[in-house]
Structure formats: C-alpha cells, structure tokens
Image (cartoon, rainbow, N blue to C red; front, side, top):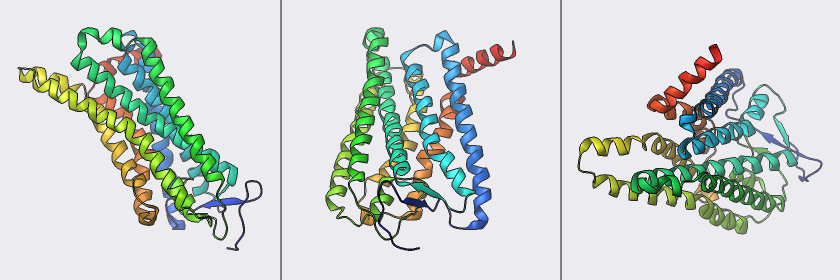
Length: 311
C-alpha cells in the first residue's frame, strides 16, 4: 500500500475490521447483524414499555429509557458501517467520516456513563432518603441531570475530535480496528503524539472517572444504609433493586477501563478489539434483558405493551 499524507479532504482510512480472514467475513456479518437487530429491538421495546405504562413514569425508568435510546444511537454509530465493511473489499472510511464517527461514538458512550451515574444517584436517594425521594428526584431535576450528561459528553467529544484533527497522518493509513477509535488512530499519526496522549489520558480520566467515582460513592452509601436494616428480607429487597444496574456497570466499565486507561505503548490490537466489542456491541444488546428478566415492573410494562399491540 503506497505511502501518502492524509488530509481532511482527499484521503481515506482503511478499517481492517474484526478479522482479517476472508472466510470469516460473512459469518461475522450474520452474527453482528443479528446482535444489532436484537439490540435495536430490545431497547425500542424497553422505551415503548416505559412510555406506555404510567406506573413506570418514575426517575429510575426515565433514566433507563434514555439509556436505551443512547444504546441504540451508540451501536448505530459503529455497527452499520462495520457490517458494510464486512461485505466490502475496500473497507474505507473518509477522514471526515472517521472524525464524525469518533465524535458521536464518544458522545453517546460518555452519555451512557453519566446516565449510569444518574441511575446510581437515583438508587442512593430511594434507599437512603426515601421520604424526600419525590422532592429530590423531581422531574425538573431529572431533566437537568439528563441535559448535563449530554452537554458534558458532547463537549468532551468536540474537544477530543479537535485535538485529533490537528494531527498529521503519513505512511500507513490502515486502522487495525472496526471503527475509528482514539488509540488505533493515534497509532497511525506521524506527528509527535506524546502531548496528545497525555491530554487524552488526563481528559479521559477526568470525564470517565467522575461518573464512575459517583457510582462507587453511591453504592458505598447504599451498602452502609442496607447493612443497618435489621431484617434479612429488608436487606435483600433493597439490594435487589440495584442488581441490574450493578451488572450493567460492571460490564460497561470493566471493558472501558481495560481499553482506555493504559499507555499507547501497551495497546494490543486483538485484546483491545475483543474488549471493545464487549461495551460497544454486547453490553447494549444485553441491557434490555438484564433490566427486564428479574424486574417485575418491566415485565408488567412489556405485557401491557404486548396487549396494546394485539388489541
């Protein structure tokens, strides 16, 4: 592949995708298409069930419906392009298209992160201050939390993309990934990326660790409060309302921390690709199942939605 400088107007990147093996392209296409359709259908059903059942018009389900919407957007930024490339011989993405994909990927991913923190705060108030729950978690405050989450996330994405747009690219323009993520794109730059790496790591640490620390603080307070409940049944009931959220947090943050909180020199194409699939494809697909299988309110809402569709 000939060397050339990349500019924002004339050149493309090549996305190698999940696997370089030509015999795996069609099977991978089928697998990820099914996963994407399940993700979209599952999250749409969660949104419709919450909006159709007035008993689910509470702060917890308000954040859950928005989390489902963000998950749909999050996967749609990445998976359709990946599916096209699995069946294409060129597998190209324009320089501008790469930056746009990077922008929306980070915006929706960080919105997910802040919504998970908002849901942790909701559980904290519900368990530790139930008598003032309606006042503290008012509709106006929930809306402000949602708007704040989206604003911070988009500002973070804008800053990151502007930083990436200042880099020069020469030589290989092959991204050893299935979408335009920060680390593999930085690997291709012929600019001095040491300062960019420091800024990216510091800024990522600030943006991602803030909601994560908020979740840890919330659950520390919840655990202390629950341990003071005298009956075992009361403790189980309090903890059971947090189980689904904790599962999603573990899946999401486990893979995110593994991928992003390491120096560029430790970047591993295969290992990072597997970890990235976990939070970009698998977690959004599992979220509807995690939040509905053991949640009686969601089951009732889904049954009510089913009855409305059939009536």
